[in-house]
Amino acid sequence: MSASKLEDAPTTENSGAMPRHIAIIMDGNGRWAKRRFMPRILGHKAGVETVRAMVRHCAQKKIEVLTLFAFSSENWRRPEKEVHLLLELFVTALKREVKRLNENNVVLKVVGDRSAFPDGLQQEIAIAEATTSANTGLKLVVAANYGGRWDIVQATRALAAEVAAGELDPAQIDEAALDRHLSLYGMPEPDLFIRTGGEERVSNFLLWQLAYCEMHFTAALWPDFDSDALDVALDSFSKRQRRFGRTGDQVEQGSNA
Image (cartoon, rainbow, N blue to C red):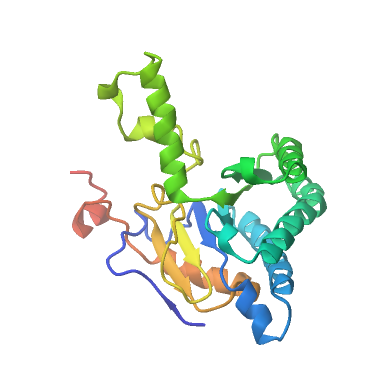
């Protein structure tokens, strides 16, 4: 497996640390199927099995949050039949996995614009979230009909509404004010971003939240990405020094000066 990282990306404050939050673009399902002369939907089904393995491994590693990019706001441009099958697969996976997630103390949260989804899918999402809401283990965030620009725009609209209602002075708008309206509010920002499938871009995923995230890219297609591959990414993360604008000497000395 080949892997690379963006040049000069900042890394973790404590060398050897584990990320609290991992965000993944699960790319390559269709190509995985095509290479095997199979319908693309079978690649997506194989990808669901990888999701299950990743959730299990992250829970074992005591990762706090795992965010998966399942369906972007741009994916509606795909062939209508594939979109329909993807939505059906989403419903099936929710019905099949919610009991397992609950038994394993996993909290499920779906972020994105749900209004475009069929009523049945919206209902299954609500049921799954309610069923797992009291759990205290890994938080599994599924980004569906999500886009980073959409997230910032909807947060901006919420702030504008507060200003219009006289509840907020425009001078009070800062990063924290915007952040409280974003989809991942209340969760630690992603420390480690992983993209499978060989592409090296963020593709409108968590644009605000990835500002200081470490990047790990791999050529492995998502159905082939296993716990060993995740451990490679975690090992790479553990060796990086996250400076957040400071010098390396300051970080090593534990100084904020």
